[in-house]
Structure formats: C-alpha cells, structure tokens
Length: 289
Image 1 (spheres, rainbow, N blue to C red):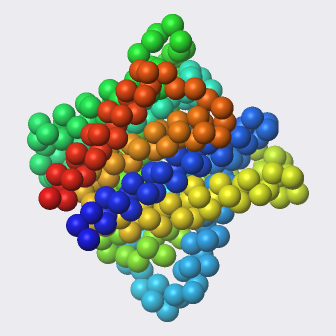
Image 2: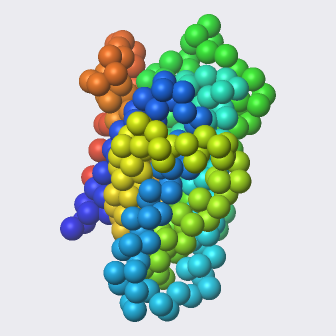
C-alpha cells in the first residue's frame, strides 16, 4: 500500500500521455486544439457527474473549502491545456513541452514558501534530472530545430504554472472531500472556462461528425479514468512527488507516437526517456520507503 499513491499518479500520467497521442490524431484531422481540450474535459465531466449522482446522498455535504479548491483545480486544468496549445502554436512542441514540465519547480517553490514540504538538495536534484530528461526527449537543446517567441515562452511557462495550480487544487480538495464531488465541481468549471474560448460552431459540429468516437475515447482516457486515479493518488502523495512522477506523461506520449503514429526516437531521445523513468522510479522508491 505504501506505493499506492505514487502508482495511481503514475497511471494517470500514462493515460494523459495516451490522450496526447489521441489529441494529435484529431488535430491532424483538422480539429481545433481548444475544441479537442474542451471535449476531453466535457466527456470527463459527464463521467464524474454520473459517479456523483450514484452516490448523491454521500456527496451532499460539500464544504466551502472543498468547493473553492475544486473550482481552482478546474481552472488550473483548463489553463494548462489552453496555454500548452497556445505555446505550440506560437513556438514549437519541444519548447512548449519543456516549459510546461517546469511545473515541479513551481510546486516545490510553493511547497517551500507555504511550508508544506521541506526544500532539500535531493528534491532539487530530482527536478534537475527530470527537466534534463525532458529537454533531451523533446529536442529543446537544439536551437536550430526549434522556434522561440516571447508569446510561446510566456504561454509555456503559464502552462507549467497552471499545472502547479491544479496539483495544489486537487491536493487541498482531496484532503477534505470525496473524489466524486471534487471532480464534478472541477470539471464543471473547466467546461465553463473552455466553452468561452472555444470555436462554438466547430464544437457543436463534433456531435454529428465521424470523429465523435475519438472524442469520447479521448475524454474517457484523458479525463474520466485518469483524473479518478489522480485525485485518489494525490491524497497519499506529496505535491512535489506527484508533479515529478507525472513526468512519465511525455514518455508515454513519445512511445504512443513510435508504436502507433510511426514516429522515430533517436539515441539522445531514448537517453532522455531513460533518465526520466530512472529518476521517477528512484524518487518513488525513496519517498515510499
């Protein structure tokens, strides 16, 4: 049981990585990234609402703290998805991915400031190791292969900050509330935020399109199942640990691309992937020990 929390967070990250591959398929079909993000959360919201209603009596007592932190978590998820895609549009996938995965730095700083966790050289070393792995995996070390803009950089950092926001939102909400209520509230706020920014005409056309099956699969994998694992797992996991363990997401996305989309990984990318997995494994064993 001592590995349960880390294991559930890791499983959530694996599903997020798979959903990234599904999202890439839908973008290749011409769908707007924000619309894709909206349906990923909307399908999840439907799943969580059904779960909430099935245990309606047990979920009636929702404290102000749970409601507030759940709303904040939903806004964080919406910001993470949106800023990530904006960063891709303004710069490139390697830059956007690398900047978004600065989230552990934001989490550790906030944990230190608010005295949630102690700042240690071990944690900073793990963060440095994971970020190095991300840079190697995404190719962000090669300035000739990427394009950088102020907007792309700002959006990428905002995606990382949003990532940190939803980690703390879910962590604080899960300490006092039930996962059904937390996820339903969080993804309601998610849907409201992203519906405001989405192309409504394209969003409505999804329902009658031939790709509706892909959207449903994306929502089930990228939200419906993964965030259930995440909210339950983060209750038993420190914020910094959760943010670093979740870095297996880009590894999963890369493997998805290789196995199903015909992508290719060179030696440097494989080295980056190995560095991420080794660091996460070492961290998980040490934290659970």
